[in-house]
Image (cartoon, rainbow, N blue to C red; front, side, top):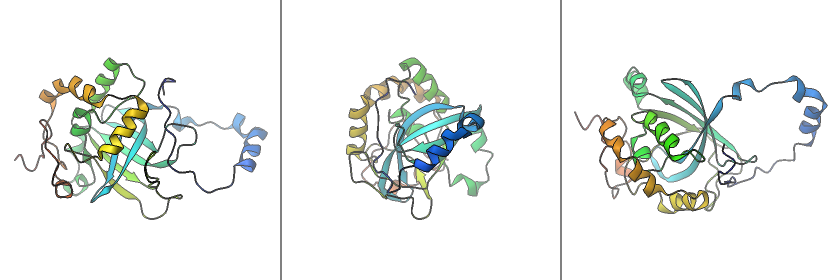
Length: 240
């Protein structure tokens, strides 16, 4: 993460005892003997918004720390902030359109489309120069994500969620029309992190020629009846 990236603290702090014994044990030598090799290459940082599938009011800011597995996949650990005390809230797998199209039809229902997030400017890579961020977003055009949240901690400046990761994991979804993401949620993130979403959206309009209809665009259309469709974001099943 770029050191100039704005700090976003988590909405909740778990009601647990300080990690005194754990820290003393590690200080006794484990830190010198152990490695965190699997975490080494989780160096792609993007921030967006997630909504629980079928639950339009359950929205939150999600900080993704991703590892590039290859041309067709990223694996991401999800947090509710970008500080040392951020809570681990879930995972997301991101795949290319080509890999997604190989999935069985039943599997495709778990994967949300990304084109609106990119074209709208909602998905950002804090700290990257504009040209590098745009290149990253271009690679994500027509991609899909499978996201499970294990902990709904709420919103940084809004009503906090659960203090502990209770309940079943929840399948999360993307926003696919203007007006689906809570304006207050987006505004608070943008103000806190000095993000100009409109400028980013305008800067990405040349991606329109690259977009394809995607599966899942209409999956939550009835949950947001007043939302407005945008060019470049079309449901693949509707377009047939």
